[in-house]
Image (cartoon, rainbow, N blue to C red):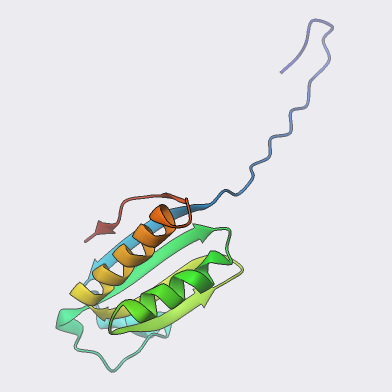
Length: 121
């Protein structure tokens, strides 16, 4: 980009992390190799299982989300990272879906976060 005097203008753009859940997905019946490669609980009935994954900002929110998810039902906490805001849970499809729904609803209704829809495949 140049101005009227032929000089280039440098624009610096910065983003500020808001309070939001940017990704929430349920993977129903994933292949056992996915569990193994992610280092998740191998003691599962793979045919009825699911992996739930979320990402949020600020990243420390993953600690709160993991607490809500674990208390919401019979799920296994596979990974919670307070530095990236990533949460991975496993369990029965219905339990994982319910846990992600509880987290999304709480963050939206009680904490004022902007949330995405939960996708499922």
